[in-house]
Image 1 (tube, rainbow, N blue to C red):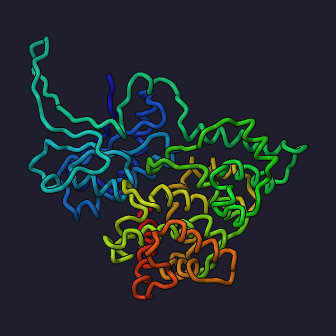
Image 2: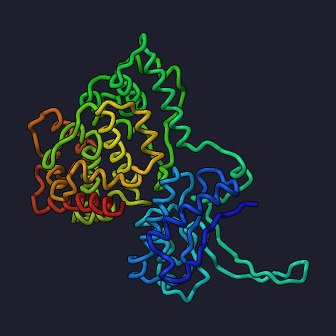
Image 3: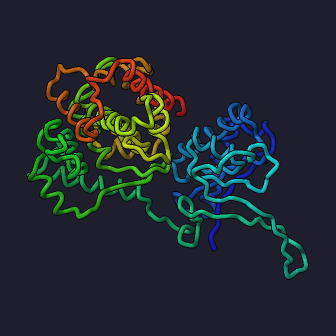
Length: 437
């Protein structure tokens, strides 16, 4: 037998939903999940058991789920939030508050939120029929017949209760601790935090982001080959990945570490410029995304439309997907912190288990671009065209040329009226993500 935890406190009228009630319910749900022995990582569905309209979703339902997410984050992200409701509620809540899974009240066929709306992309359960059974006692019991899609939420069986199964995130943190300890002892030992961080990040980004042909040695300099040889001999790990505690996306540690390493060593640009630290994260990904647009230009004449459809959207395959944006943003924020002299292992643990991760996009927008879409556009344009750092400019051009098909246009020959909407689209996505935090 497998079960799904679901939380409902009234949830039948608009007045039941607010940020404050979401905060209260998120905390209570956490306590009950612990009480019943559900292991960390379990999904608990929060119910919207009435036909909420779009204006009501905006005014009350979205704030409610933001309260839920804030509460769960304040308790260490032990459990993940799902949403129960009609199709429209599930879709909008998932898109705007990043609930990881949807339980669709499909039997409520008269709900306006089920009429003409597709199933949410992250649906795991869909109620389709109510069936009446006669129990041995002679009493009749009404049961729901559900369709279950196991990809996101397989349900909770005996293996997920009554104990503690380390999550991939916890496993990742333990591995980073091990690498840090070895980095501190390597070569006779050192207490130099900057050197230890450099070693840790070089190992975590190796081998994909230490190779010469990808430009990383040009961007950041050659890594310590003796250190890499010793560490790879000690730790026989495949690519380290973990599940993001907020968005349920798979995060690749090598990409995150490469971005953090670039920011730690090179810093970042100002409100209208970009530098090598930026190229190690969002700047490099935006360059390959431009090539992606040009390769699909027959279907997307507008760079703005291409960004709106393909840039950092959950469930959409892209050269600059949502997980890439997470890795760029987290790498930037972590890189800033360790550039100030703190150990990477400490900063990483505090970040992914604390509340800062819930506002990552807003913090990135504010710290890197001063919360200005105009700054995003100017910095992106500088990344493509500023040749004051000739090495960086060559790397940026190479990043585009490596991905673009032969007859597609490079940025330098694209008319301004054609290229500008592409930068505007990037700025719009960055600001939208910030507003969602």
